[in-house]
Image (cartoon, rainbow, N blue to C red; front, side, top):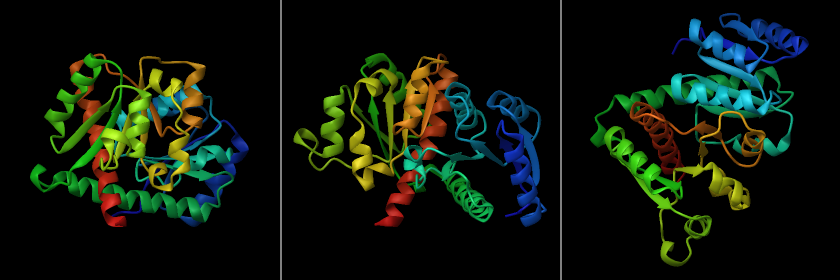
Length: 278
């Protein structure tokens, strides 16, 4: 794998980006660096130039930051996104099995950042190699879907069946059912641990997801929140309290296929990670 990477730094603080650029150029001169002062500017740059890694400041405004996360996940799934967080409460996803998003404490030593970039890229290569294999040879993955809407779940299930038939979707139509599933209580005793959790925004806002932070095993499960809102102060709360990403629910069949394709890849990678840890 070539180490000549294209890095996009997203931070409104010019002093921070200047210092980080100088340190990176000194340590890995073969990397090319570009700076964006806002999440929206970063989205524009992604459309016109190749980028391998996005390093963004975790203190960007929640709405634009969530849109940048969504754009990378759906439109540029091969880009590694590393977020440098000053709030320790957001670091729960630091050891997430998703290669496409990593979280590091801010300020982050440049040596650690370089190591994290190279590690994430290596895991990405393994993921792409897995995708090149025939579907029958890929591992299965279990997804827990928290959604009250029969229609939304039916569409999502059909999309997954078309692009990732190896994924098993289990639906929890209420927060009580989700809690029982994650706790393996009642009818869910012995249920497999999910490799990815998809949660409707309304259920997320009404639910108690502290279970995810109390259990080290569950804390490693990527949690993606799906909703219809584009800009909302509540989205910042979603990202600060347990969610790996917020994605707007698709409005067309093609976008459901795109969403299912990318989330299925995350679930497959998570399943591989869980298998390796056993």
